[in-house]
Image 1 (cartoon, rainbow, N blue to C red):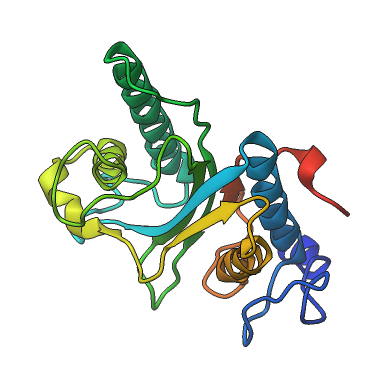
Image 2 (image 1 turned 180 degrees about the vertical axis):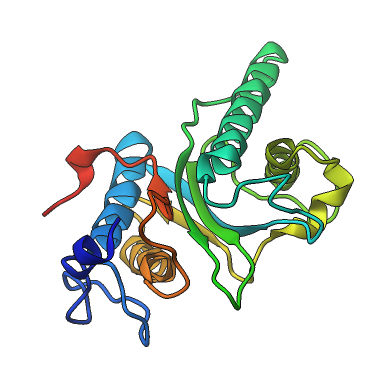
Amino acid sequence: MSKTKLNDHLLSKIPFNELEVVENYELNSRYLKNNKGLIDQALSQYPRIMAIRFDLHFPRCYSDIDYDHSNVQFVITPFLKSLTAKLISNIKRRRKKNKRAADCRLNYIWVKEGDNDTAAHYHVVILLNNDTYNTLGKYGVFGDNLYTKIVEAWATALKIEVYDTRDLTHFPQNNIYYLKKNTVDFEAVYLSLYKRISYFAKVETKSYGNNQRNYGSSCKKRYICN
């Protein structure tokens, strides 16, 4: 997105469409609309959703020879493809063992950030069917859980050993949200999740122009309200 087009989408008031957002940042309203659309899309697929917020970092030894930082699909796309494949494989294994395993689509939003003062990194949120996955798994312990799948998928994308990737995947505090329709706390959790990921829409530390992408999601246009 060019600087000129960006100015057309800057948020001029808080809250946004009566939804509370993070303060003290200049926000891109187009990204905010897309964030809401992604949550609504996931809820249209499954009545119970688990959202996981995490960060992906690069090893310090990475250089321009190893990775062209201006070409985002070289890393984030392989990560998402690898994670999707791992989820599908896990469901198939469960079903072969006669275990209940509901379908689970990978709904996601990612943003790429980094400037002269901050190393390039990604913020990510994924939304999964809570009837299929209901926990992240214990940090630092490898096994057949979501934590491991995320670490392994990032290792695949970076083309490095899994052991070297554990410290490059960061799971912040209170990073899991359970959205369940027809529950008393549904609206409160919805609003809390929306505000949390409104940070993804901040303009600061994102690169614009030169055909660089700094935001991507699996949201379909029909879920975005103008």
